[in-house]
Amino acid sequence: MKNMKFAKVMLFAVCSLSAVKADTVDDLFEVMDMQKQLTGGFEAMMPMIEQQAAQLQLDAEGKKELQAIFKTWFETDIDQEGMVNQMKQLYRDSFTDEELTEVIAFYNTAVGQKFIKQSPALMQEGARIGMLEAQNAQGKLMERLAPFFEKVQK
Image 1 (cartoon, helix red, strand yellow):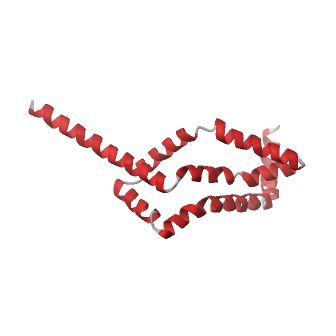
Image 2 (cartoon, helix red, strand yellow):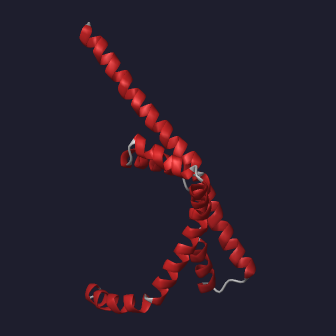
């Protein structure tokens, strides 16, 4: 009987700790405005969509249609709730409850809020910078790939 009572207390304690951590991750995602961050991730794709429109030599109407297709895909076909749940688990696995509490405290400061607000634009600009650098180095990649393609196409 004592062992059963001890097991129940331990089970309650483990469940309580998990619930606290889940609440802490939920709090973090709320203060981070994670839905806005996801939308910012989509916005970071815009330079790639712009590049694709340019390669296809689309007029303004065609470019707008291409953007609408990507937007519908993002809003309809991407399981955003599933992504958020996986990301929450990633944060739970990567940080202690105390660390998450410290991060939340930072995000609740003026600098933390500025960081959150600037993140989508920073992601978009970072993606643009990366895309431009990849374009600039594309010739060298093709040079490196040529011997490989020759070898595997034989």
